[in-house]
Length: 411
Image (cartoon, rainbow, N blue to C red; front, side, top):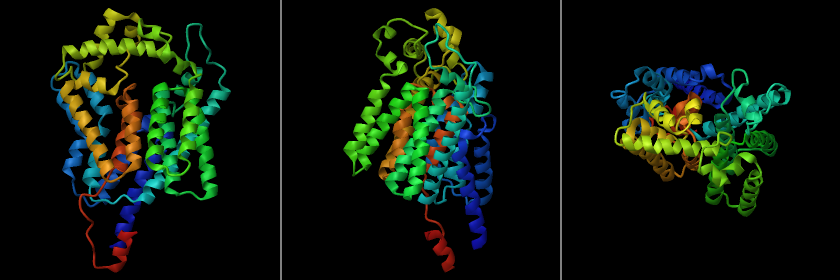
């Protein structure tokens, strides 16, 4: 009996750790960790469904599924639901199959370390292609960073700069948590510090404004809440880093007020302003239920056609997750989405789960400037981290008379 429980526990832990390598898992098989953990948990775990949290954490998918009833473009709707299927599957894993499974701090800390390491590998591969690239050039009317194009075209693991920046930022948040928990020996801390320095340098090179600002705000709040020693020093370092970043063209463009008057295709901030104006107009027309999961982009494109050829040509999404949810499912869906975030915040605060609070703050700010939950690279990582890090057992594990098994459960 003990051997069987040990084997099941080992398989579950290994399947969870696979997610730590998410940044370097090839894009075509990004969903593989979800499938693996689903199968292992379904076979190995003693199932006890926590229906409350299963419904809360899968509520966004349920709202999308409901909107499919009144969407007109069923083909796109099906594609969107397939992409977002992890929103349903991951909560089923953690609040169904693993509803009674104890996730120990040691497993979380091991996950943090592997995630930092895998992100470091991603950074090194990216740097290799940046250094060796000789084809990507600047065009006269192209004011962006060519590194962002290179990073997208890396074979197998190439990512949109936003999602790459998310990976890098999460690795930094995990490192701070590990330092706070004192899970490092001195030599190991130096090694992981090097990993994080490399990750941070790539983050600044990619220069994703919204993600970097979100990370700074998150780290600032985290330091204020949790760090007892050297608090002032850490805050000054973060402020200095943010000031240094203001010399970057991509951040400075946010302070060009002419970008808010008319659309300039050379500046992403200007383009976003045009997108948001159309998004607000579109939302007003279908305020309560939205357009359905399959028709959101079509509704935006119709507005773009009357506003700007630049927006229509590129068929930009809403670049704001809250707006995206509202266009698809109306104010009703947005209310459910915000309730989902609030309930997870409330749970994290109740259990003093600092890492979940930090991850949620980071994502909630990042979602203001990007649709992070429309691709597998974004949706899988977010819902896995939230379910894994904020997981708690519904009831206590059954205590057997065997003293050895009781000892095993207490470790």
